View 1 (tube, rainbow, N blue to C red):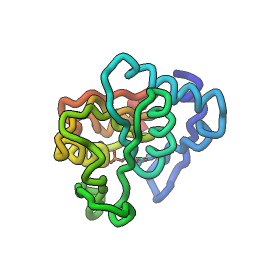
View 2 (cartoon, helix red, strand yellow; view 1 turned 120 degrees about the horizontal axis):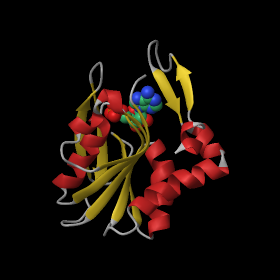
View 3 (tube, rainbow, N blue to C red; view 1 turned 135 degrees about the vertical axis):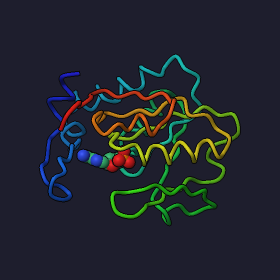
View 4 (cartoon, rainbow, N blue to C red; view 1 turned 60 degrees about the vertical axis):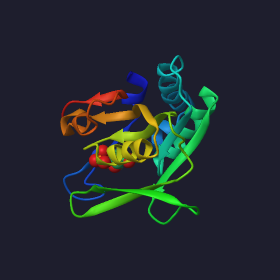
Length: 174
Ligand code: AMP
């Protein structure tokens, strides 16, 4: 998907030395690239039975909400700990140094519901795996995890077990 690949911006040494940050803000800024990204994800799942899209804070909100709108279904925010106002479920995942947690409202996913998880980028897979556990603990089923960018060399798919992974652009090396 050249339009996306050519629009994502590499920012070396952000947020720290040695990391090449894949900046998707130019994709959002470009009407054709933005629409392509949303349509690609929505089209890939338009024939599946999906009850809601769960977006991971913060870039997963920007992408997940229009995907949900396009599919004609609702949107669930998964947020960093302490941001959601009602009763929450929490999942913790490992970072390079330490841990982080994401939360979802207890009543966001009902038993048996099919959920599509959306975020901008799959790196090591820790964040998306935590989002999957939130959905599954609530009794939901993860239909797939969908991303604009997959850093395949970090093997995030492995952390997501057998769950379906969809990505528009894959990078096989840094
Ligand atoms: P991970 O849990 O390692 O798969 O990291 C995924 C989350 O971190 C996503 O929400 C991404 O937005 C962000 N992220 C990790 N690595 C990068 C990177 N190289 N460029 C841009 N975002 C990244």
